[in-house]
Length: 266
Figure 1 (tube, rainbow, N blue to C red):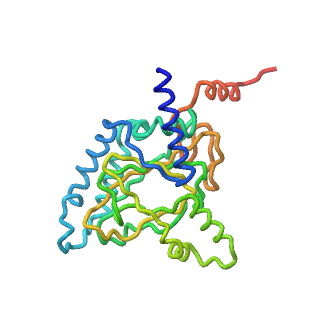
Figure 2: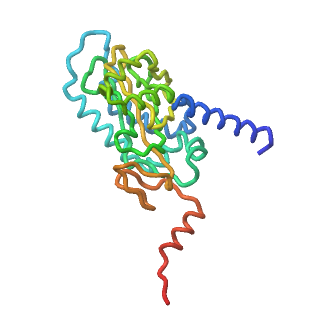
Figure 3: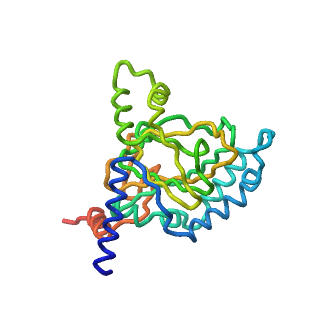
């Protein structure tokens, strides 16, 4: 690789890291169209009824919405080598940010936000408050247009830090109170199909009722370094944990683990 391209690559990664430092979230183009197409093919097949509904008209409640979600969720997690394929959407970024020893969540998460559907709402939260490791990265991938209330809202790191500080106050009235108080600082994702968002689990985020006429479909999955501290609900060993499994490890890590597992005879 020539010096110019090396400098360009380093500059791009610095920009991504700076964006994560300031905003807690960065939107990028996916790096494997083939992998995205494979996941998208399942989504289009399994969720065609939902994606093709005319939401501008008054519609009947989709009684089998959850059934269709679960069927799509199951099919996505049955994709051969789905871990490597999903990671490939942003692998270069993940390796630069996490290093060569990477764990991946054991299951992909599927989110379907249908207009005016209260059952798919996910209130304001920060993953790190739910026992997840604060050292994780979430990769969130769009399979439809994402805009306004059909997408996820989030608060940048600076605002999230203020909200965390208020949570420790004796006058704290709960997350919903904080959401309303800081709502003027909230940002909604705006993404095209095929784009990915990387964000830290230390920012507050969630969704509201989708008041647009467009359903939103997205997949998300968490990644972390093998050696970074785990969350309160996670127990990690070389192979991962109940929550994680190994995506890849470096040669020196393999050598080191083989050494630690040797049988010593005297």
